[in-house]
Image (cartoon, rainbow, N blue to C red; front, side):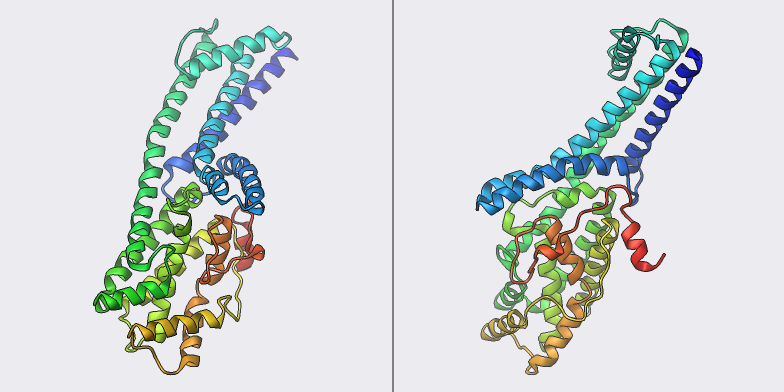
Length: 372
């Protein structure tokens, strides 16, 4: 009975280690959007209490404290993932050590196994197994410990490089569209600076930005919760500004802006749809857009006062604009609420947009929505 118990404990520990390695490989090595449930659970375990504390500061009007708390979600979530991987590998190999050479009937055997596992994982070598089987297990654990260290060394720079790449264009947008950015300011300033016929510079850059965000933020979903440097200039708000500016340019400016704006709209809608699918957000087809007609009319009035040639038929322009915005509005509002982006006239989020990412089956909602 003792031998059977030791074998079962060792097998359970080995299985746990394999689960951790699978999660680490899915999160760090695999270059595609594959969910890693263990990493997701660890990340949400940090995000949920921080979000609850931030909500309390929001109700009290403590906006700076709220922003400071929300800015911790991304970094603390990553640290929680790394700590979870390390802890579970240590626990798993403790079980293996206990199974191959420990005494399952005494507490001392478990304590010795934990010491041997920790010594091997950290490659300190301060405790040496007493049996040959234990030495082989120690060699395997030391190798895995080095692999985890190498993954961490490459993981963090990759994430922060992607973050810096995203924020570079967000910061540049403030020059063209103000802070917080608005689509009206983007078009008006381009006209006033005599660069209206060069808006393809914006469309080209942001087409690349949307493609990059769609790829990097599904490969490394922690980036979704990394906040921009300025609270009023969230990366979601910046993306929404460019999409709305492209939609305005196509629907309300005469003559119509070149086709590069259509490519930007397509890239942006696809990027937010990809993020929504990864987060398990159910796609909902809505007949009407959330944006009030008043905001659209005021935008056209402002553009007209600046000298931008807007169309005469406002009703037709509104229908054309609503048709473009409908392609991305639902996902945009839900993701904006998820990351607690500051609401604006062009991004009117509310409590109905709140979404809790599924913990164990992140793609189930999306598959059900497609009828799969």
